[in-house]
Image (cartoon, rainbow, N blue to C red; front, side, top):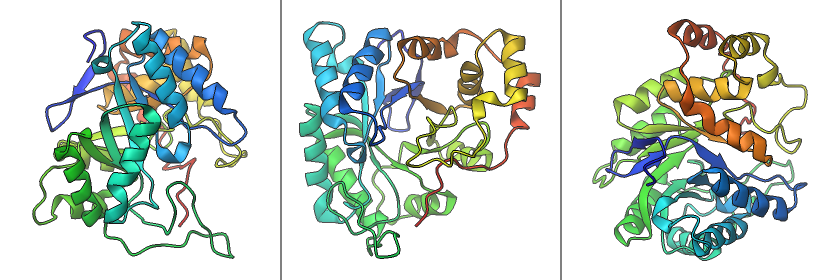
Length: 310
């Protein structure tokens, strides 16, 4: 890891940069925008890039990484790349082929972090989510504890450095941690987490088990129509957040990211704009007072922008 990056130590001894760049892309955004954004992100200083097979941008992310390596901007060991196992690939025989497909798309020999994208298995091909006639997912009968054993084997094979989970609740994490014969604990749990959903109970539990909580939707999401109710409150317009931002002479986005960082959360920030990418990296340049942190704690309303409807 680059010495310039603020990093968090994982329970397996590896380090994760404390701010990541998110790469989710809705259907209406062309893939060329993802390629351009990944190039910009690396140029401005991001070394932690979070993607997933389900986002269908791994090829673009891989192209950007390889081009920056060839240009001498970064070395592979400077980068921390996360990808995820699609929840239609939780069957044991599908895990390694899915990872190998991701590695091929990313043009990498290994990823730094490989996550089970969701604990609830669906019947699916590699990327597509089949729906029944009512528009709901068709569930499969796979035990994620069996899937986890395959992730452990991928780690032992050197295809991934660290393994973790995403969208797991307290009980699901507990079940995995209590699994007989567990070889490696998950290093992280990536969940929706922001000022309106501060995940305080889950965060406390993860900390007690030395599991890092990684936050997606850290800025209240990009509000893509595909997933987010357009009538939902705009996080960055919250008047209390804006007051704290004005007091600290920072943007609301920076305050939202700093709030998570000071609680020990690793936030993922997403943007297609260079000025926003640069600004978000200023999260390490200031501190929020205990009074400000308590004020921001009060914004929690257990509100999800991205409810997982199964």
